Length: 547
Image: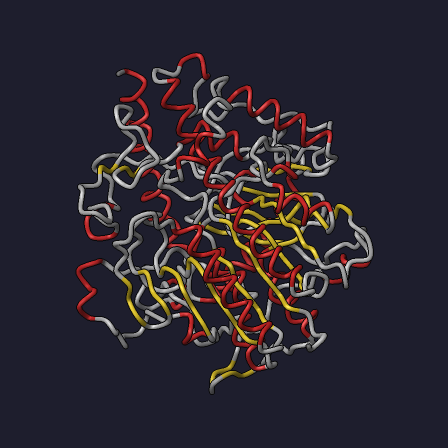
């Protein structure tokens, strides 16, 4: 067996900073916790605020705009390649680089770096139009999973095995388990063939809809009846006890659009929604346990670099009965043909295949404890992710790494541990130089500090992290300044006292934005779109509270 390490990247979907046991949660995640306790936990790992931009950054080592996904996976501009909505030819994926270095490259799960497809387009398959690159076209030797961003766990749309579309009609079929089982199969085949492998295990859990197995839900039915405020407090205390947040940082106030648990009109339904969300995480952890067992049995666990993280913070999205996702983008029926009911309707018990609900803003506020905001924002709650790295052969001792880091650092890290090169040209195209820094020095020295600034832009929201300082703007476009070492929960805005620093950092952000292709006109359009979506969400929540 080659001693080049195997590499496994496990990506959770919409998992908040405090949703794992090893990051303060009450959810049972023993397998992931074992990776953390035997490896490194990063306390200041950042993502790109939303699913597909984060995936683009992780896979390419570039900022999302540079890779072609400056917003989402649909075309926002016919003239600006940063917003084409799919991976471009001037980027190279981890899989492409490692495939060239002799690795077998494997993927199981969610792709979401190609244009969205409506179900009405299925008859056009296979499709050679630009904009729909599949994993095997971007360096993966074997693929099982889904192309789009969200869907039923019992009947996902655009489910594929390599280039073949699959129609899911089987009973007792659950997507999280399928992602695990196909990933384990692929890894086992590679180990049987004695070749080093790269496995991208891209779960959809715990992204909405709230779909979970009954036996998993049962373990959490009584956990959340005390409400989200109690959970936030308990998680904050546990994070402090684990040394992952500074006791000087107060927990952020309850989000202005959330409400106290005591004012909940449907407390049993609210508690049950969070129980399902916890069950989705639990099931993913069970899958990680299966993978670890196989690596251990094959004596490959010590020689495998395992990286676990999330694509963004917990999602505050409210699913309305008349929401925009329903027509054509998700299945309208269950695997056995029953109608599916879309939306956060309290008289429907979620969890089964006939429902399509989310856990909403108040629970997302708990998932992102102790930080502000959610998926989509670039305040800490939107862009902070747990990051765990486990590699017994390459990490001398477990510990906690506190240096700020970013998703663009994952690709350079994978290439360094594999001894692979980042190409200047690939398949006849000039490749944009990688933006990230390898995190491998932190494996040997947890006190290592990553050089350079970190940058963010999504849907008009902006941020730059520079040393202990963070400059960020949200809905009002006004810059806010926080000294993160002292105040990571962003409670005291120092912009009024630090005008020169604000000017310098804003100038550096603007230079970066121009360099990577941020479209300033589109930013205004996106902000209006996002504001309209939030108004609809707030109206839906208001209806629930008045009921």
